[in-house]
Length: 374
Image (cartoon, rainbow, N blue to C red; front, side):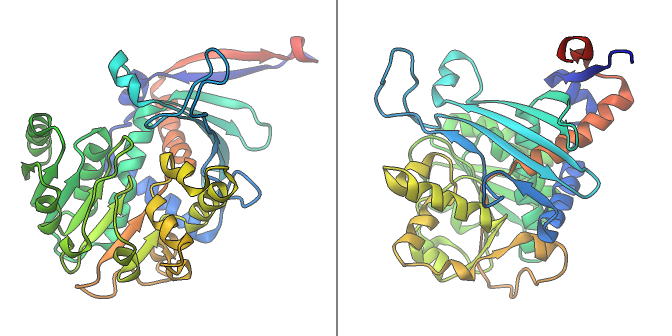
């Protein structure tokens, strides 16, 4: 029998842009489809709970050996693995390296790679630049949430953090809620914020003002999107939330337990956050160790302290599938908590892979040859 080659398609960031990675309306539809599959249970993530966010290296506080990394703001390295059913029926991984110090070296804070595998053979049929895939799918999640959970006729978005991720979040929220007319941006760097606001205002045709006070961004907002990085969480007082507000936690915020217990909490997939909780309880430093990775860190602390009953938390999947109601009244305040699932990366990645193949993009290479492995 003739030797069989196993070929893999390499897709660069440039290839993915040409394939349509920046098409947010399409991305929102794909991510909504993934939430439907999650609601049906047609997926698997890592670990015995089948819902692990990923396997992360917890770097030590002090260097144990020369060259061993130490912990720091947004310092993590992890493998995020999963299987997704439906029309996808693939396995995949998101390799995640992150370090806040990267920006001082002219690099992105996070450097990501997406790998898609045949679910039966394990063959990696594509290896893709992951940063834009991740940014777009991360933004699309609050876009889907806003479509199903925002108050009807919502007009104003409060943006906490003027970075790459909130660019995608604002874009997706505008897709999910076409009635949006304006936004208020809070950023610690007011001049950078003004530049960000000018760019996004032109892109989306809405008025965006900038403030150095979080309260001003929160009080006016029908929808609040939180996406900051670093080791300091933005402080948001519960009383600032207007009736009917939707708060989307792409990143965490310092909020009192009452912000959750007095309002409705809906999760992307609460089983994943329960896995965060288990990881934290097993770590020598306790729950504080998962602050670097879990956007629900403050909620998990409230649960651990007995100040919130997690059985009240609902999931977005059944709402997307029409099995449960989303918003129950115009005055209901909803806290939508997320954690980042590789399911979204591989779904958007597979969509882009198919479009890249149709356009003849990428570089194909022989991953291995039967003559060498038999």
